[in-house]
Image (cartoon, each protein chain N blue to C red):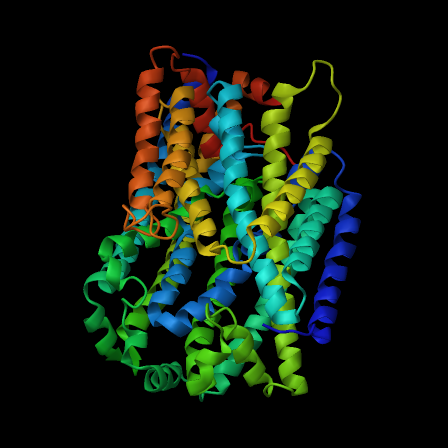
Amino acid sequence: VSRWQAALASPEVTELRRRRRRVTTVLTGIAAAGYLTFLGAFAYAPDAVADTRLAGVPVSLWLLFSQFVLTWVLLAVHTRLTRAYLEPAQRAAVAVVIGTEEVRDAVRA
Amino acid sequence: MRSEPDLLAIVICGLVVALTLVVTFAAARRSRTDSEFLAAGRRVRSWQNGLAIAGEFISAGSFLGTTGLIFFYGVDGGIILAASVVSFLPVLFLLAERMRNVGRYTLADVLAFRTRERPVRFVAALSTVATGGFVLMAQLVAAGVLLESLSGIPFAVSVLVTGVLMAVYVFVGGMLATTWVQVIKSALLCVIGLAIGIAVLKANSFSVAEIVGRARDLSGEDIARPGLLFGEKGPLNLLSYGLTFALGTAGMAHILIRFFTVPDAQTARRSIGWTVGVVSGFYLVVILMGFGAVAILGENGADLVGVGGNLAAPALVTVLGGGVGTQGGSIALAAVAAVAFASIVAVVAGVVISGAGSLAHDVWPHLRRPGSTVGEASVARVCAVAISVLAIAGTIAIGDSTNITFLMGMAFMVAASSHLPSLVLSMTWRGFNTTGAVTGILTGLVSTVVLLMLTPALWPGDGPAPMTLDLPVVITLPLGVLGCVLGSLVGRRSEAVDDERFAQLVVRAETGVGAEAVG
């Protein structure tokens, strides 16, 4: 096992990858579900979303706006998760990777 | 169409051009080395990069054209706006930080990290230039048509002026000048967008319900009913259209290379926040403008907005400014013309530096004679001029009747079908290799061009087109993924997996250790 493979196999990098995979999978899933729901409603229930109103505005328009809100919310959640959940693991992983003498030399080179 | 040039619009456009040229020549002093010319020395801050990405992304067509789409087709016209905003989530979740950590100047840096460089870089450059070519032609056609409509400058002159400007920005100031041109454009968009949004709301008692209510009274109940634009071709057409624009951004070379201009992955991630803020805020104004145009222009609106609806926004702001012939109306119209012009030059400059950078960094090193001392920045300058000349000539040759929606759709489809699958798989799948990269990119590119030729818009034969989908990304994206996977499986017989290089790629992507330094 060579230097980068050793770094990749370290518990810190493994933990970082696990955390990032979890964050990415969950947030991507929510984004995809929200977006496909929006497209599905437009494709399969045009009359319902046009004729139903909330606060005087058709649901079709609310669905359009919902994609903007969904993006803002997921962006905020991602930022928060990155700071609180990913960055501590990343700092630990960087310390281990840089701490590996051979990797440090390779990076310098 | 105007028959006489609008002097005020030309003067305001001239002021914007003067400002961008001052910035460009100021940037020239800091665009000498390859890193400075192609990546702005990696010193761009998050807010600058965020605004630059927004400036790169929001085309004149996306606000003038989409306002017209909403005017004619109601909520269906807004789908592209929602898709565009959502499209930055895959960029954020999958690519932004990893690209910054792994890449240097081009997409091929990431794709070729653990594959054989020459074939992968050549194919990636071909795909990048092809995608950029579609965007360039679309934007230059839009420049010609819109400037002719808004300021009275003839089509060919408008294309020539825009094309020369984009060449000057890139040739003189490289990525730094391009960045600042895009920042200026985004700032203009924010100011003008805010003013228009407030004006539309003020004219309707600051009530969205009233805007929509008036629009329904004037245009009919169907304006809020999905289906006016996509209803006839069925749900799959809508799904494919929506996916094209939601996923295409994550494969657009001229967007992704912007992450190489920042100092680190954290800044790359923060950039997206700024971008989403500007893009989503402006697109909300576009939705207001679309429904506002119906509500405010009244029963004669259809005559004012032109056949394609591209003049809906100019007609609306003229009325909001006080009407045709008034000073306020003229100033408002001139401001929109300036924003449209700034939008176009900002987009095309970004596309030109992306294509020129790819040719200089991915192709040139494999073609030059041994011992050649010509740097990549110098080659990129020459390529920028060559690309600009070809784009100007091509655009004037195809003329103003070209359907720019399909040129843009083609670019988004190639990006979603060839770049996105290969980029994601290259950073996540151990078994990905040279054959997979080449096959995947070519499959996405060729299938997009071929299938688009079978769509109703481009079908050259007699009778109905074989393909009923407008933008068949639901077919080309899986084909692109399949190309990557099957190619990699076939290629593994001749190319062993380099586990050490894969480990280096993953560790570098995740941690930033070994990433390109500032300067």
